Amino acid sequence: MAALPVIGTEEKEGCIQIQMNPFDEKKDPVRSDSSPSSQEALDQLASRIVIHPSDSGEQSSAPLLGDPISLASGTPPPPPAVPSDVLRISWPWSHLPLLWSWLHLFFFALFSFGSLIAIQIGLFVHYSSGHNMSLKQFEQLFQSKPELAIGMNVLWFLLVFLFLYVTLAVLPGAPFWQTLGWRKLVPTPNAPSNPWIYFCGGIGLAVCVAIASSRMKTPEHLPIQDLLKNRTGALLLMSMAVFVAPLIEETVFRGYLYPLFSTTYFRIARFFGADPANAVRTGSGFGIVLTGTLFGLMHGAQLGWTWGLIAMLVTVGIIFTLARALAGTVVASFLLHLGYNSMIAFSAIVSTHGFTQMPPHP
Image (cartoon, rainbow, N blue to C red; front, side):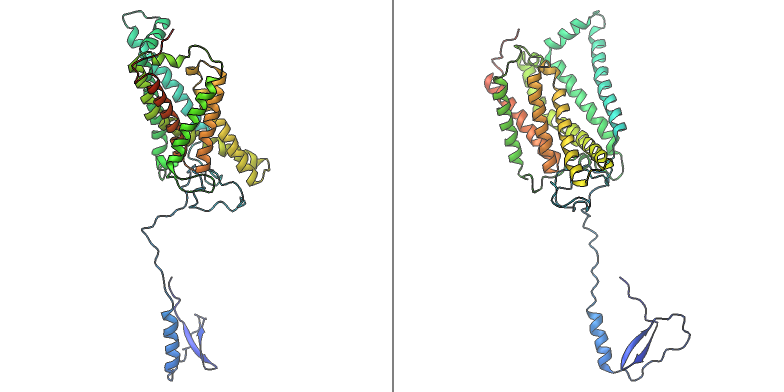
């Protein structure tokens, strides 16, 4: 902060008065009998002016433009338009536009379905060349070789993740992981910051689902059981469920889809005159329910479209998304998902004595 130059001074009633007219061509009289006490007072005043240089090494804590992560972490203040008593949940506020839109989602869905079909066509061409394999025989091949189906699924996961990385990470000023909601767990008024709470919560959730499904009438054979016909398939399936699925699915559902759904409903509600507080609540609730529903439906095929089991997975998906919303980071839902799948894998290992005693299949 630079000081303004003193243009001129004149004495009035024993004081020094600053002359503020820079166009005055008259020579300002200079006091020849300036008392030491006046100069001393000015020196004392100047000594009290302290200029604090800005700390250039300290990064700004303002949220990234286009970051769909919550302001609930407590670092940046909430937008002034929203009352302070509003539930502080993860929210990509309307003044922070997302870097992706429904058009991007359209191409993402197109690529996802297209790549899955392309992988299946490629495998069919590879195995049917010279054998005249029918579609029925190709389906039986997948059932007899679980590692083939699991490998195809892992490859598809990687392609979907690659699409998001290529289309989002190249944007300037948008770190891929932070933009998709991967932030460090921090204490918030609505959620804990201890990672073990989420991991153990996922274990408890898996136990509750297992108890509920045991009391539910389900088909004797589910498509996912075809992957458990032998030890190799079971090991690969559990490995994918623990090391691959939580990372990819949480990035897609809780990191990519949830902010888009929530922001869209928020803007629609505001357009129709809803106050910001209600728009935040309803928008986030809409995003949580829709994201959880899509998460459950995605697993419908492997459950033989048994709607009771799908309904439980929809509930699980809603709980995952709620944790992501309250904690303000995908890490929360990832740890829940990891604990959930880890408990399923542990139960499968124990019940089959390390996959040495596989259950009979029809």
